[in-house]
Structures are given as C-alpha cells and as structure tokens.
Length: 225
Image (cartoon, rainbow, N blue to C red; front, top):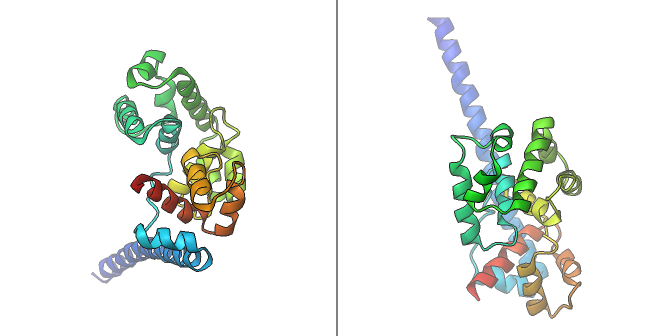
C-alpha cells in the first residue's frame, strides 16, 4: 500500500511539474509580449499609436512542424483566403500527420488537384527530402539563433528569407523578426514613416529586440485601413 501511495504521489508530482513548466513558459511569453509592447510604445510614438488603437495580446503561434513549413510555402504570394483553401486540400491528401514519407509518395496530379503550382510542389518535395535525410533538421532549427536558423532553412530550395522568417515568427514564436521583403510591411513603413524604398529594414532596427511585435501591429494597421 505504501509503495502504491508513493508511486501515485511521484506520478502526480511529475504531471504537476510538467504542466507547471508548460504554464510558466506560456506566462513568460505573454510577459515578454507585454514588455515588448511597452518598449515599442516608449521608444516610438507612431508605434505607440498603433498599439493603442489595435489590440493584440499575444503572438499567434502555429505548429512548428513539417506541415507548418509546407503551409508557409503554399502561402507564398497568395492571399490568406486562397492559401487557406489550398492548404486545406493539401491536408486532405494525408490521413493524419503530414510526414516526409507521405509527401514523397504524392504524385504530380495530387499536388495539382490540391491547387499547388509545380514550383511549389518542387519546393515542398525538396523540404520533405531534406527532412527524410535529416530527421532532426527541425530540432536544429528550433535550437539555433535567428540568423543560424534562417541560414539552415534557406539552404533548402524554395525556402527564401521571407519563408524562413515567417516560420521563426509564427511557428517558433521568435519576437525579434522582421520579414525583409514583405510587401505589406514595407508599404506600411513607407506610408507611416515616410521612408524611401530600401530604407524599411533600417526603420525596423529601432524596434529591436521586438520587431515581430511591431510587424504584427503594422499588418493589423494595414488590414484595418
């Protein structure tokens, strides 16, 4: 009876510790997000106005998986609505989890039926081939700093800086990412900060180390405009 009680207590404490760590991590992220908004408000009057008029409480983090990266590839140069429709069709091709093996088993007609262009089909296959050859690839990306993670991902054909940076921002929850080359962000910066083409990244430097949060507010401002 004593052994059973001790075992039950151990399991309960283990589960409590696991959930506590997970909860603390989420609280820490929320604290960082709020701290980031305060930093931006204190250091940039234009950003302060955006933060006060557009309520964003946290980074909308997605799954940091093969499927998540494939979704960003599909999203390249498409509206959110069109990309969501195509990705939904893509997911239907799989029974359960999206894996490298399942992607590599798809035919050209499978990709076409989902609405995925030939170049994007090649990029998704190249990604699947890399993960099949290097199963711990995404673990390396998660463990790397922002610059090293970007270099790792852009070594795969079809994954450019924008795709890598969007993955870091929305799938890994990194807070200091500015997706250079994002047309919407660049247009917003030129409008709000009277910047010239090519000056957008320099403007964004003032938001370090919370460029992701600033980017979120610029996207929201564009949507609401």
